[in-house]
Amino acid sequence: MSEVDTSAERRFLIRKNGYYYRPNSEGYTSSAIVAGRYTMDEAESITHPNGPDGPRDGMSFIAEHICPDEDWIAHCKAISQARSDALDEAIDAVHMECWTDGVGRGVTPELMAEQETTSLAINAIRAIKEATQEAP
Image 1 (cartoon, rainbow, N blue to C red):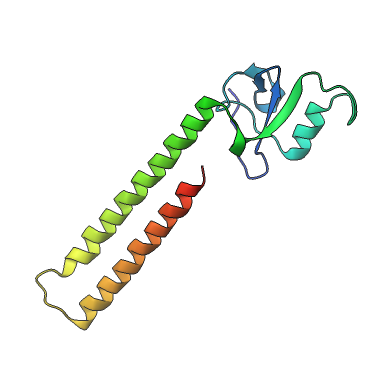
Image 2 (image 1 turned 45 degrees about the horizontal axis):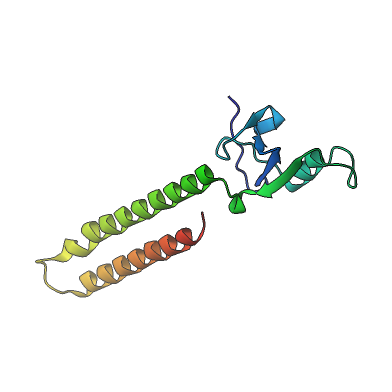
């Protein structure tokens, strides 16, 4: 089975008569998850086999971020939730490791600096979480 290339340039899916091209144009699939990813130039070239003004033989292409395929949308939501959960765990780990470290030691300048650094780390993780929830 061919690997799906999800590099930054390869973000287009090619469709023909309701099915997606597999990676390297090797067959068809009904799943956007296992469909091949193509650059814009590749997608235009493949979907215009008869030249820019010729018939397209039922072919089109679509950017993966607007793909209406239900399994792709569910896949993206699952990835987003996994990212969110991982970031929540990171926040908890930083908090438990650093913030509660000074309990019982009394308030010292060192402890205050450590807790301020911890707060900055937690806020950075929260910012990453917010940014990744906006993208699939």
